[in-house]
Length: 162
Image (cartoon, rainbow, N blue to C red; front, top):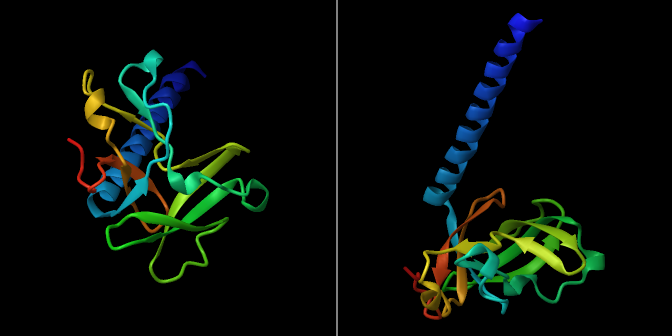
């Protein structure tokens, strides 16, 4: 049994490495080919003093929700205006129905007060908090499966803050 012990450990490490690289490639492809969506930010305490320069994000599309009528997990169906700013159409448990001009983003409702849509935090370099105080939108790239990656914060004119 001892001679198989190291083989099993090495095999598990290789499988973990393959899985990690596969998920990394998926995120890279999403960044390259995903649809840019701007999600309006809702007011929230902007910084976490315990974690350094860090901003907690909350999106306006996750406000005023009837939690009794929505599934715990599923998809938020979005519609984009001419400036790529998203508005919520509905929540649904599966990817369908999806009409023309509608987009999906995965969500989880962890409790009656919290719905996670996209990325919920944004880290920035120390000393640059003032620059991000004017953030009005979170820029998220999404794919047809509802996966999302936060690509940055945008100001009121929808210009990426850099």
